[in-house]
Structures are given as C-alpha cells and as structure tokens.
Length: 251
Length: 256
Image (cartoon, rainbow over all chains, first blue to last red; front, side, top):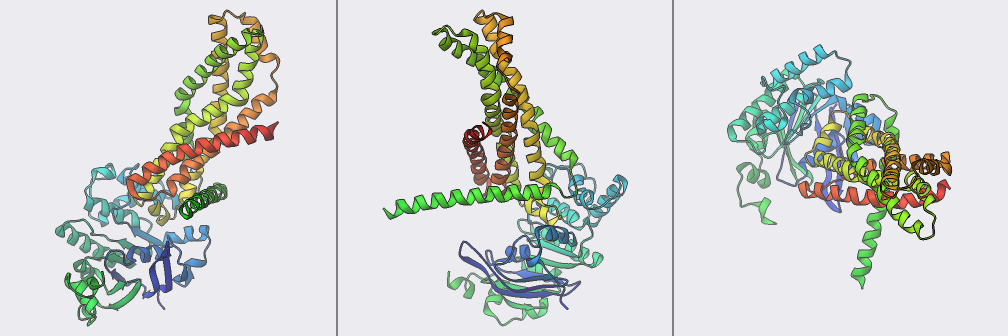
C-alpha cells in the first residue's frame, strides 16, 4: 500500500485552478521528485501533503490517515511525523541556529538540556555544519541557511521529509552539494522524501521516481531513466530547457 | 453608477470578512489557550513587552493629560465660580475614560503595530508555515501569549495612568493655580465610587484584547512581501484605534 496518497486533488485560489484532479502515490522509503515550471502547483502540492493547505476536493492519505478530515489539533499532532525544509530555510530569525534546531525538541520532547545539546550537534553533523550554533540566521549564507533548515527538519526524526525547492538561488556547485546531502540523508535516515524542484540535475540525482506536474496534473512519472526517455514533448522540452516547444507555445 | 455600487459592495464585503476573521481568531485563541504546552516564559516576555516597556509612553501621555485637563476645566469652572469641582472632574475623567482610552491608543500604536510587523514578516518569509510544519500552531505559540499579555497588563498600565493623571492635575492645580492642597485632595476622592475604578480597568482589559488580537490577525493574514507588511502594520494601528474608540462608547453605555 502506498504510504503517501494524493487522490484527485482540486485546489483553486480566487477562481484560478492550480490543482486539477491531481493524483500521485509515494511508497514507504521512496524518494519522489516532482518537477515542473513555475506556477504549476508544485509548492501547493507539497503544502497539501503536510496539511498546510486543504484541497477544495480530494483526499490526502498519509499511512492510511486522511488529513483532510482531521481537526486543527489532530493535524497539529500528526505533523510530528513530518519534517519540512523550506525554500529559503524559513529559520526563525529571532533565534540562534542552536535555538532553531532545539525548538521542536523543546516543544515536543522531554529531553534534558544536555540531551538537546547532543541531538542538535548530531543534526548539524548530519548536514556537515560545525561551529555555527551561536550564529543568527541572517549571518549565514544561502546554502548554510538551507542546511540548518534541513537539520531542524530532521531533529524530531520524522518519517517523511519534504524539500521545497532545495537548490533554487544557489550556485551550481553548492546545488550539487545540497543534492548530495539530500541523497545521503535519505539513505542514512531511511525516510520517505518528497522534493519539488525545477532543477533537472538535482532531480535525477536524488530521485527514485520523478513526476512532472503540468497545468495542475501529473503528466508523466517513472524512474529517472524512464523519465528521460519519455516521448511526451512537454517533458522533453522541460528536460532540455528549450525555449521552443509545447510548454511555451500557448503563452 | 455600477462601479460606485460595486466598490461600496466590495468595501462592505471586506468589512464583514475582516470581522469574521477577527472573531474566528478570537475563538481559536481561546481554544488554544488551554492546551499544552504552556509557554510561561513567552507569556512573561510578552507581558514585559506590552506592560513594562510601555511605562514611559503611558507616563508622559497620562500625566500631561491630567495636567491639561486641570488647566482647561479650571478655565471653564472659574467662570461660574465652581473651581472646587476641578479635582472631581479630573479624577472621574481619568479613571472612567481618559486613562483606559489613552493607554489603549498609545499601546496600540506601540505594541499592536510591532506585533503586526513581526507576525507579518514571519508570514512572508514562510516562518509561520515552518512553525506549523514543526507541529506548533501559530495561534498557540504567537497569539495566546500576546493576547494574554494585553488583557493582563493593560489594567495595570491603566492604574498607573489613573495615578499619574490625577497627580498631574493636582500639581497643576496646587502649584500653578494656587488651589488648597488639602481641599483638592479631599475633593478628588469625595465623589468617587469603586465602580469608577473598576469600569476603567475592565475597559483597559478589553482594549488590551482588541489591540493585541488586531495586531496578530493583521500580521497573520499579511500578503505581498515587504509592502504587505507595511500595509498590515498601518492597518493594525488604524483598525485597533477605531475599534477601541467605538467599543469605548458601547462599553460605557453597557457598564452604566
């Protein structure tokens, strides 16, 4: 049985349809990457998986639990099973790096101060950062901010990790470092991950399965190899990053 | 003609929407108030921010208002040789009306706006989503401590304002207008009832709720980047001030 199931999701904002009968499954332990152009509903999809948005119609099933029928409190508790890394890190700028990573531990566990310190160090180790505990998020570079965001996301040992555009705005080398880090975390922690990106290089590197979102629907999905060999002209145009093709014809 | 009607319609729809959001937030804040975990440290921090840090502003506004009130009423009452009522008028006006309203308006400007800016910035930088993703409801983590701080601290600020306003009036009357200090003191308390004090404090508590919740709600529903944060901040002060002044009338009518 699929671990994450999105079933026939519909979502519109101010009468603009973003998701239109969108369905996809993710198996336990799998790494799914959803690709697609800007404004195709990638972020909206990710926010549905963690219940930050409610669909107008359709179901979001996580391990058999329907998020759409949960109360605010149930959903809040259920989210402990998730870790989410945001596009720019979304670190709490009023707190230091240490406080950021310790935040979920302080709120949701009964760990002692010593245990928290050890766990924070461990998480920072996992993302290969050292000696930044006392720094403020504003003192960090873009790549470091994201890594701290990863560390915060894994601090409660979640079952599902979500990455929102993990490499957008980073230089190619740092992008590759981040992609390797995601791959490494995925293997080490044995979690189910869903990543959204428009960076095909990153997608092929970290994915067990790639899916493409276009006009609110999944138009192609498969292993990286299958995806690359897709005969769908839209998919091919996107992979190659060409200006001419079906993606741009009707704009 | 149609466009005028449309814009009137839109304005009313917006007004109803905002009112709905406000009461929805109030309900959710109350519901989340009684759930674990309780952030007593954060409650305390917000109380310092709303209460202690507002003391200088409250000090100046209420003291000078008491002083000018004594000057003005003395001017008027001297014409009918009723100077002895200055003390009572200053005390009644400060306790029942001026201290709670002035404190409410000043703190709305000082604290309500900064809450809107703070939470609004968290919205546009996805920090509110990050809170939710970390299984922390923003209503519980951000709204509850702020609203509690407002409801608890405003009455204390109001007491301070009462004392300072009455003292300001006394100083002006005695030192400047040569009133008899013993008689003035006597007149200050002669006609006072306990209800005068209580009604002012209840008002202050309600204003504390209004200004903090309005700041939080405006911040929470911020859209559109830095400009949106600026808009929310302005709206928070303007709408909180308006609601305070409107509520003031109805509360006064209700309490007496």
